[in-house]
Amino acid sequence: MNRINILNTTIDNFSMEETLGKVFKAIEEKKHIHHVVVNAGKIVSMQKDLQLRESVNKSHIINADGQAVVWASRFLRKPLKERVAGIDLMENLVEASHINNHRIFFFGAKEEVVKKVVELYTEKYGEGIVVGYRNGYFRKEEEQEIAKQIADSGAQILFVAMSSPKKENFLFDNRDVLGKVNFVMGVGGSFDVVAGKVKRAPKWMQKTGLEWFYRLIQEPKRMWKRYLVGNTKFIVLVIRERFKF
Image (cartoon, rainbow, N blue to C red; front, side, top):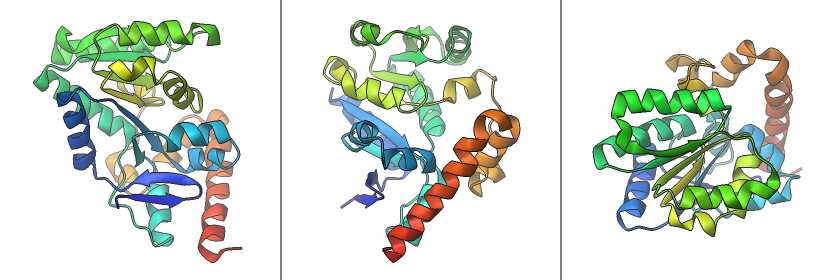
């Protein structure tokens, strides 16, 4: 009842508050939730990347991270309640972990970035919330060992800061080992934002769906293809879906 499907992608129709409630319940009941977010670019990739499609669609909670996805859901007459941005969910969960004594493992990004994230959160919330951290550079054959390290750390929450499809596939491929962690989530470039390496768009741009444009202005050489080409493909796919041609 709370799920929709657009462009071969399953999305949960949850608000931020509802998503947080399900995470807290999973931790309290010692259950496991694999969370993922989708945006326009990821949905476009999922049309051809079947491994990514499986990794996303078999997750327990799938939120719409991009405002374009929310707009598309309304255009396709399957309206989502709101955007649940991955970085906002992460920030809410870190703050809640301080209040509820939950333990977090931070995995991903460059060494100096993840270390800075841990330092900032430790300074703000104390050392109790962090049980470990590791950068996101490793060989494929190291995956299981890393997953075991995380599982054995006693972490209740795992944030994985890597690009797609690497983070989705890591969490899906190692789901059995990571089953000991109550909540696992890919957070993309969120560590870079928290560490101050990348600036996030002003609130008004976030609310009007222009956050992608702000990123494009900051890093045009790296982002132009992802946003300009990817967003155009997404619009075409949505129109085709609506009018069935």
